[in-house]
Amino acid sequence: MSPWPFTPSQPRDYSLPNASWSSEMQRLYEHYNNLCEMETEGGEKIKGAWRRLPSYNRSLKYATGGQCLSKLLQGKARIFTRNIEEQGAGFEYVVFVNKQEKTCVCVFQAGHLLEGPPGHVHGGAIATIIDSVTGTHATYLSGPVMTANLTVNYRSPIPLGSVVLVHSSLDKTEGRKTFLSCQVTSTDGSKMHTEATGIACLCPLVWATSWDSDGQSSRCGDGSSYCSERTAEAKQSPWAVGVLFECILFLNDQFSKTFTSH
Ligand SMILES: CCCCCCCC(=O)SCCNC(=O)CCNC(=O)[C@H](O)C(C)(C)COP(=O)(O)OP(=O)(O)OC[C@H]1O[C@@H](n2cnc3c(N)ncnc32)[C@H](O)[C@@H]1OP(=O)(O)O
Image (cartoon, helix red, strand yellow):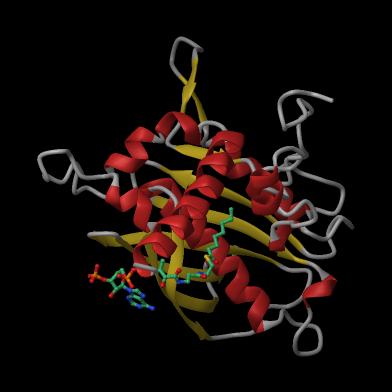
């Protein structure tokens, strides 16, 4: 048995194209993917403003060891939006973030298992993709967060199998809270399907550690936090950010129990 609780094999990245993607989904993927890399006049490839975020069906996929880890990670758990193995049947999506503009866009193709009203997407599935996109966006901007509030207005139904764009933008940050707005539109932007606002709250333990020993806040005040700077390197790796997130939730729980039982 490996002394390290994680197998070295790479998990599947669900944000990459597969055979179920429609030509519109593929076209939009290529459009945003091309914005991730620019070519200078000298022909040199440089990073563009956009970045594709990889996506897995677990933050930690192959954890097997340690009583604490096993309890914490629950081997059969899967990320809700990535738990249907059949390609194209559930949530097919890819998320791109623009670091400079602090915006995020998700290209989303809704599969037949997401039906609500006949031939159209279930409202809960729409809220789910919005929560995932705003949650991912807030995590990218501020560090590990939980959704504290999500307010959704459904404007027009989304046909099953269609491709839509989920746009998330940062409204403001205030203390531990990241305020986001989200719109789900047709791919040409002519039709508004859903509008939402959300508040993501930085996990308490992260917040507690974002104060210097002299009691001064180390936050930048520009939407990026001390935490996100500290974890910037970890964010490069979904494995590392997964470990970090899971550990923070666990420690947070212990922290709360300790301080509420005395
Ligand atoms: C890779 C895929 C990413 C997917 C991302 C998916 C994201 C999710 O779905 S998370 C799951 C759903 N969310 C949850 O289960 C969260 C449950 N709630 C909680 O755990 C807690 O209420 C939590 C962490 C949000 C805040 O609790 P706590 O840390 O005790 O902070 P608390 O002091 O109550 O509130 C902190 C601030 O948020 C505000 N706040 C808390 N809840 C709300 C709310 N519902 N609406 C508005 N503001 C709120 C408080 O007023 C407070 O503001 P201020 O700092 O200005 O006084």
